Image 1: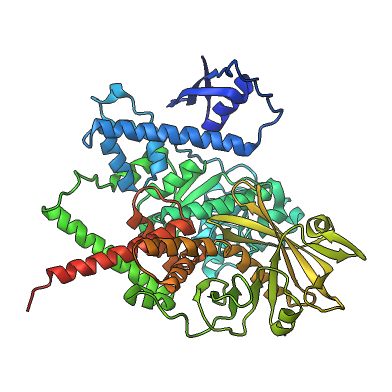
Image 2: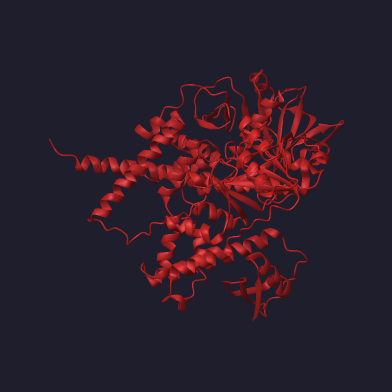
Length: 634
């Protein structure tokens, strides 16, 4: 048996693999004051079987799977120990306190896995404060020269922070902007003896002059294709600084950090620094600290207002104390019959009503489903209509102008078409002037330079065309697109086969967090078709790949409950997908309500949101039945 240590889980596991190889058996692991400690031995292969040859390289995915397995085993052990100790044990009380402060189950399990049994008689709260403060990275190391790029959505306070940092560091600080600051901000800079300069993304002008250059970037949405433009142009010498709003929800913070870290990594300028913005607005700090801990972000300052002096250093002890101060420690679970049980029932009813209102307001097409059951389909057509299956398939999905699903519609409409294969000659003529896109496989054969090739073989000749950010199967991804002019024969052309000029599109899907390639897609579209319309179909095709499986899942759940409503299944599947894709405030709030309704640790993805919708409908049905039973008889 050997002991291995590291500053984090990944480093310790790397030392285990380096010493013992891939056959190491992990006996135990625990958190220490210096990081992580792992006990491992080399597992011997059975004598009756030949020892497998050890690969020369181990894929990173396998390492991630091993780390995930270790985490799950440790978390499960921590939960079992808390369950055995009872609801009044110190770990159980600390778990409730962390949950009440907004920390995730993942961080809670990770912290409490290191709970020392000998500390049971001591001060549990002091132990919790120490563990969080030791893990939370914080510092002021922004005064070093270089280019500091401020990142964050519009209105979060990047311009104000630029002035606060300039006032704090002074010296040869220079201010650059993408959008011209308001007159008040210009006067504030003049009061500091500084002036704003327009950013032309000329590397020489930004990096020249020494001192600290602060770049105030334009506020953009997470789906904006130009979100990382400044970082890409400035390159690895830039230092990104992300503003995170205090009081924001954990899901929103998690997605924001994941997107910006992925863009920064792709630009060669890793994102490790952050500032707590809008601290004067109040709200819990727990979700923000949770994301910072799990994403290895160093918090430097707290921005408390609009004035240049409203900036204070971020001290771990103070941040932890503020985060836990607003925690309401939950008591023993309420039992049926006491007052607290009735209060919880009323709270749940209010939560259901809030979720229902959000869904009604966000997608009016679903009002009939929420109120009366299965609807008859949409009565108005959206700009695009997706066709699943054959050309005469019964299920057609209407999309709104942003490419987000509205729900099934029975009408044909004049919108674009997403086809499951290259159309035959007859369908080609029926489509007429409509825009369409056909999803095909990489082994589909096309003509290129008078020779037949598979699309996969042609990809090397394709020209880069665009890159977009979107959600795909429950995760944030970057899609890199390429295009190539080709030709292909059309089936059903009679004795004289018809050949059509086409544009082949190639999509490489990259995980936004790790940058790894997680999929490749191939499409064919008519030659000369409007590229922007084709792009909208390409993105809609990727976003809605999960829809058929979601519909089957919804239909199965409804069948198990004796509800024969295929239209309702389609509506539920479309709504679950839209909730995952939509960045609007209504969708963010609705996701939080549905995930809270399910309880436990749930990750945002279409399948989980569908389960939440089904749970919402069941709960509403049960509460209605309860109301009828409790109603006074005439």
